[in-house]
Picture (cartoon, protein in one colour):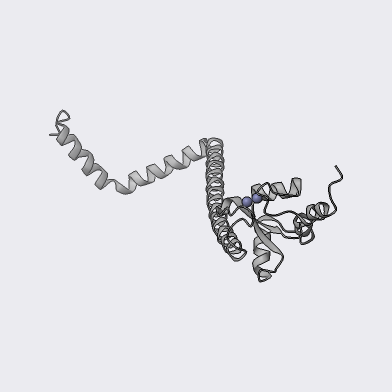
Amino acid sequence: MMNWKDPEQVKEYFRQYRETHREQIRATNREYARRYHAEHQEETKAYKKQYRLAHHEAALAKDKEMYQKHQQNIRVRARQRNRLTKEEVIAVYGGECACCGETTLEFLAIDHINGNGYQHRQSIKRSGNPFYHWLKLQGYPLGYRVLCHNCNQSLGHYGYCPHQQIVTPAFAAALAGGWSG
Ligand SMILES: [Zn+2]
Ligand SMILES: [Zn+2]
């Protein structure tokens, strides 16, 4: 006799039942799933749509993240390349400010000796990093020198640098012609 109060016996009974009625259970489950699906069609549709949307957004976010990572790598490499090029260009043109001797790369820039650096850079449509790359590509043409931003600013604004070592051609001409006040 089956003792329904013994959990072990109950467990064994169901185990045997599942084994002997496997096909029947499967059919019942299938039928249940079919009926559930028919009755919950709208819900299922809505769920699927939501699932697709959520995963679509996750996929988009992943894409965006990969893209940003990629862009960041490109930027990092570009910055390294730009730094190397600037180091090389500055070194070729003397490695230090032609006026005060400043050697810190961040303070230095290339200056067009005739004093029309801005116009020249405009005419070749390059400034900053593209300008350094251009100088390198041109094989380091003559007519350029290294200046620190302080000396460069002073030369550009006043026509001379307080370090008193260099003046712009325009300022030199003014000096040669004497002060008019
Ligand atoms: Zn300087
Ligand atoms: Zn100076």
